[in-house]
Image (cartoon, rainbow, N blue to C red):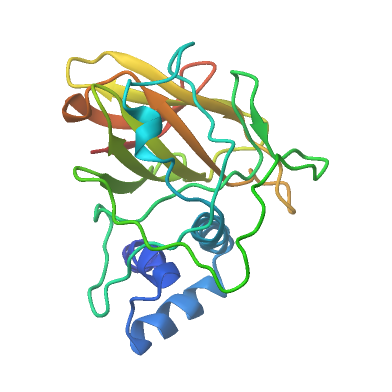
Length: 243
């Protein structure tokens, strides 16, 4: 498959997970997934997000980010499904696709969800039988964007949710080599960089880097965000996503 065709299929992964593609596009995506390990990994991460993560209640953020810095890892999760459009085709950059579900993402603040030995963080009790959470529409001003770096092969889908003079992030990252210690960095329009989170890239089944999905926050005005980067300890940028 040529590169242009591959990029076209990649753009359909989010809509495919959300179930808003027509039958022809579903067949295209599933044929592509049969041949592309990286895209299968990204679909798995996005399905995990859709199944496991929900929004933190808005009242928890009325006073800005938590004390102690920019890093935040949500530890209380509840199941929720996003609102689906009946016929619309979601493309990269369309708000509403949350990319987050922890797959061995280790935050340097000391919090951790999941580990290589298979242990997991605490999850909330399942909902009572017959009771389901109501769909939550995206917060006004929420943005979603994706990008793939042609040089490194790394890809990131990121959701930015505005708050009072700061921003919450959810990111799904694939294509970074195993063992890299990476940071999720928010770049302001004046070039200022703020770290929103960090993790160590795990090792997947065939030795390649394991995809990671994580939550973070940065004390940057949402309207001032220029791009989001994945950067390692040495300062190498694996992928940048303009927003």
